[in-house]
Length: 138
Image 1: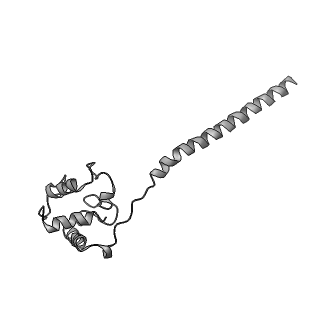
Image 2 (image 1 turned 180 degrees about the vertical axis):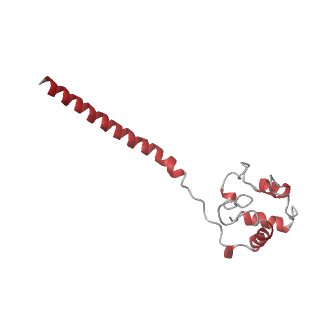
Image 3 (image 1 turned 135 degrees about the vertical axis):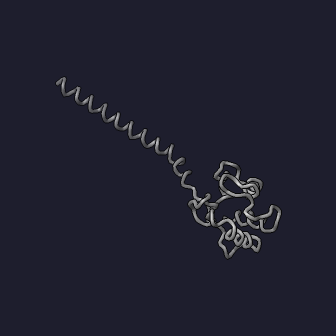
């Protein structure tokens, strides 16, 4: 009789432990779910080409002529340089610098790593400003 009683007690402890583990696993999932979903945040798509302003359209043309050999603009992946898709929609550039006009202009003007400076764009020119305007649409 004593053996049967200890089995029941032991079995009850296992049920209790199993219930606690299930509860803890569920609670952990609830705590981690917001973190997991935060990583799934997608960025908005680029502005459609047929909706670009005249300046943005000029920026697209200049980008295609001077930048597209090394950078994608409307798709992910690297060519010789990083994709510029969502460039201004992220807080930081691929280099870790802040994604703002001053920093992007400085990289275009001075170059960085393997990127040559200006690539024929004169800082302050209409084409330079148009490229910056276009990059904002990505």
